[in-house]
Length: 264
Image 1 (spheres, rainbow, N blue to C red):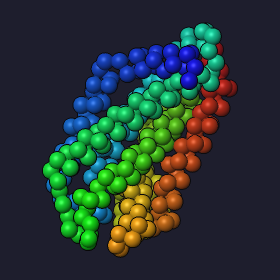
Image 2 (image 1 turned 180 degrees about the vertical axis):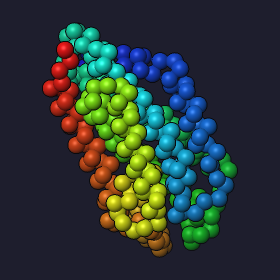
Image 3 (image 1 turned 60 degrees about the vertical axis):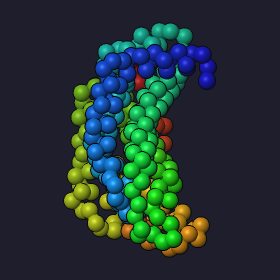
């Protein structure tokens, strides 16, 4: 990492995450998520409460953070000021995206870590799986949950970055992002319980499907016993590729827009 990139990341964090943004996000997220820490869970719904309570807070946070960084940056000509220094557009783009992406991942990953600690402190045990309990599998399941969280943060960050640079307006880009994200959650919520892989193209159902499939694969592959899941291979691949490949394509498209955008 070059000195200029470090300076740009530090500037972005100071500008976009200054008081009270970080404090508000942390407080709202913790209040929203921690009450769902349950003393009793089974393997099929272990990660579901986390995503169900977190997804709407997460969507709004991503919209505001990346909307301010890129959309407002173009609209209020902050990017013009940055580019007046001896830095390239690629460096500015990389610094802004990395700073906000890693900060969001740290915030929500921290909440997931606190939830995991709370779970172990209460030592909730379910004897559904034999010879291992869910408590024995919990570290692995939480690792899969963090992987799915990484994918969700990456996809949502890439999508909001693309919309901000394409629309060039803070308010309008947020509106488009919220309509898409909430629309997908509403549509998939209406069809909950079906086996259609397309219904897991959401930031709530997709991660849960990924965790359930990986949990079953891990349990059965290591010969720990037998476990079944509603998350089939097609559902897993749909959710996983949607978040990872979709995020990569949106990130590349955003970089293309950043290099071509007219800031005058």
